[in-house]
Length: 502
Ligand code: UDP
Image (cartoon, rainbow, N blue to C red; front, side):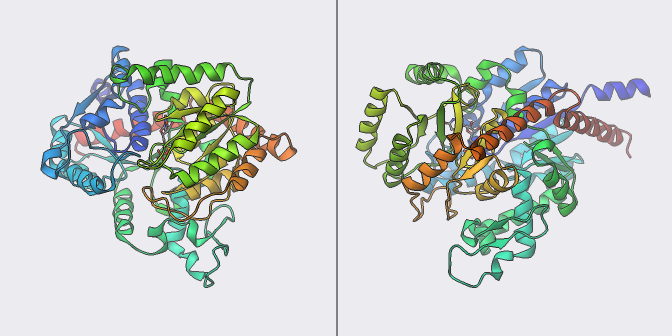
């Protein structure tokens, strides 16, 4: 019997199905790679474009003897009327293509379920946006783990608003009136306009979120890119509130990407597909950082999904120039808008050696860990937050869409490692909305973030402490390390039970 157990122990197969957007693919692939690092046979299912974003890391892991591979499924572009190569959601995806991509992904469901069966998965780990996979797992008699993108804090806050609808108590039209989030470990306040639209009033997305929560309750549990020392109270709270199990396994970026090549290539198409210009851009920005003193440079980035109109870019440019700090800004401009002022701006800051603009994709992990970086202006996308925490950086918070306003609350009010720029309105990720954040507000937040007053120094000290805690979490005996080993062990026991017909 013991030898049968050992045999089973060595043969657990887990299949991962990331959602088709860069910021969901990145952490989930890191989690898959962590499973493989710990002796699990891993298969990641992805369409060709999604696979191109991580294939070089998977190839490297495999050449190190880890059992990890990608199974590519063809995206049905012709069937849904899309040009070949349009299969993922990102800043460049045209709005009219979104429903077609979603339809294409739906068409793949049967094929993917068949793969789970044919490749004899013992467990599937699938993105929250694939609620159908919980039924597929049930039909196959195997567990499904749901990957919940974002912070556990944000999921807890969403649960609070969904359960108690506290924003409905606000009757005035004032955009500044606040409600507090009931049932959470801290007393936290927000305004109704900072809530995602689907939480304010039911819409189609509310229905999708209900399906996601239902599938979550029927899953074995949830996995987060987070760690106990960062938001342990919320990890405990969420388990109780949802009545589910969950495992925090982060920071996954630091744990999975210890090799410089992994850091450099994370989230972008294979290096060999990169143009010479892009490679030069990567090394150019790092060279520039190396020429700067420690903690002197402000990094400004708004993630992989957003582009700003010129009206907003002008305000950012002026605030950066006026701040007097050196800066590195990842610029994503809306197509068709006049960018001439930015070209002038770039020339000027290049000549003064005060600023470096990156047009397109930045090697963010390498940038954040560079000693020259002293702080970041972020849209509070959870991957960027985790990567900044790893790097021990305090943040100026500029939330825009998805769960980012909740992440801002965590950073500013709970962890006290963030200073709010003061954005008032949530918006949909592809719509800019009415609010243009003025340079004065941006400048104030930058001054506090990079300043030398007591508040600023304390904030940066707390950020460095969390970075140390993050490093401990992924070491043997650390919270995330222990969670991963326990989770794998539980999956092995479940497999054994299945084989023994329990
Ligand atoms: N990222 C990057 N270079 C860029 C923009 C983004 O490497 O120029 C990475 C970033 O490191 C993070 C992810 O893309 O891992 C963005 O995810 P996040 O959750 O921060 O924001 P989203 O893209 O969902 O808005």
